Image 1 (cartoon, one colour):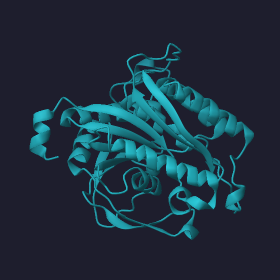
Image 2: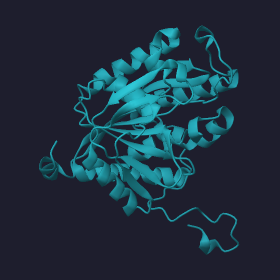
Image 3: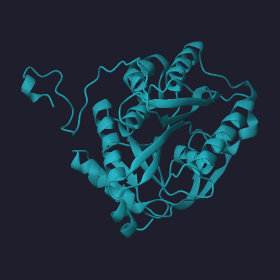
Length: 317
């Protein structure tokens, strides 16, 4: 879509749906190593086929495997091309990639994030190491690059308020450019990995406790209660070692409107090297769930970390 076409449709943008998908390389590079890995591979392929039919014009990704320290980074190279070897699983081999990114959206996204007080920048240079999670998601959901994409990093130190604001900035960019997008949160559920090599056929969720929490989160998502899961993310993370504090769900919920008005479908749930890997599809619905658990602040702009230990209440932001 050209810039002139976008100008005509600005303000008509919409989030058509959201996906939660895992990003471990086994799903892409060794799907037949374990029946669960094959199941996830096929489930993500099917989810991708649906994207080709629902009018999605852009895939917007938040990947917990692309970590940043200072602020938020947006991939703005229109055609990133290189070779990736996962840092944890060298033996699985390489992922060769040549992707189709939306540089215009990346710049708009950066600007909207800046407007809301976040530290943000675009990155675009030859050989930029696209993370494994983004590659697994894009190669399985969008193998022929038929839909352009844009990816944002996961700031390791951003807490809920900052991540929620990033989600709102994402929606700002969607509406400004008038695009129909599908949001993709690339994240494990529980993220305790085996610290020794195992036979792939013996893979399972790291602990019964992790498995129980994963299933409860998936049950709630299956009811379409995305914001409730966002509210539970801290507790889930503390109990089941959620992937990067499960902050991808904060971003996803903020982008999709911070409510429970969704039709949720859990397409798959398996173990990948001890972690919990779920494939979940969320589509906006007219009627939301009545089981609301809203109790968190709803920040609009970022003013820095809160002075929670300050004796002067006026210093908190």
